[in-house]
Image (cartoon, rainbow, N blue to C red; front, side, top):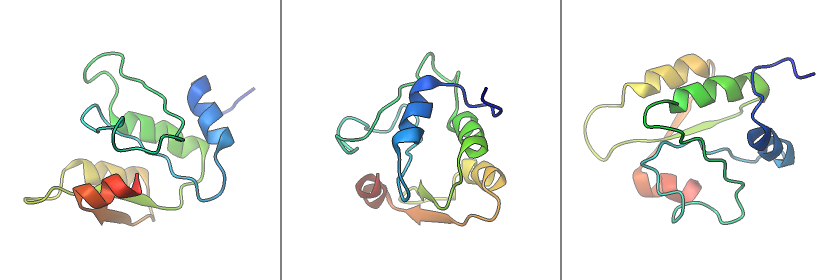
Length: 109
């Protein structure tokens, strides 16, 4: 029996198939996943309804299930840092957020 909160079978499969150094992209509905992700990536869609599941909800569960070594975030071209970065830092204590511009983030994803 699993003793952590992650029970989603497709996510468990994707994490189980991942090796050392693998990356996990947690993106909202605005991310161009079809054109800006590796075709070999295991995709799991959780879009049940708008705003029902937030990126931080998914991250909170994934953090409980696997060790996280690094975190890359997309920064806007101009303006202030998005407020969600504060939540990321709370969920990932001790991990520095690596800030990437939009197209560098797309390339990394």
